[in-house]
Length: 157
Image 1: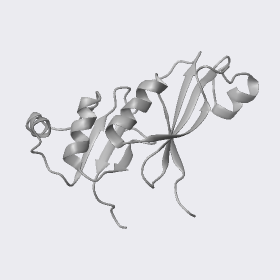
Image 2: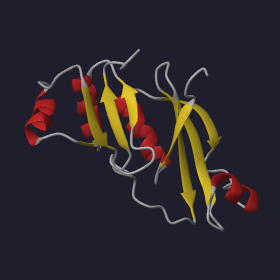
Image 3: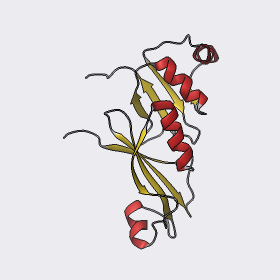
């Protein structure tokens, strides 16, 4: 197997999510699969393919590139009842780990873009003042609830 191609994330606002990934991780748009100005994807075939409830629609789809790793695909839906994003202890996908060069700088940009770090208040203050570690790993939650791990090393590789 060559590896993971992409991870898909459902977001409430595709433009806000795109800006978040651009601001924090220097992501770039590599494909617009469905722009908000285009008619939504809907109907029985779309409901089947995406596992949507009846009348659910895909309103936007965009793929972001992050360095040379796997891509992140963003989706926006309407006419559905989304649930809150999972916690790290729930079954299923719990977080996306993004390899970064500088943990301190990335954590700062993460907070500045509206993310919340899973860290004690002293660590958060160190990030704000530029004195937190530049290497290691750190979890946080995006403004829409997805858990992201920022990491400077590749375990087992």
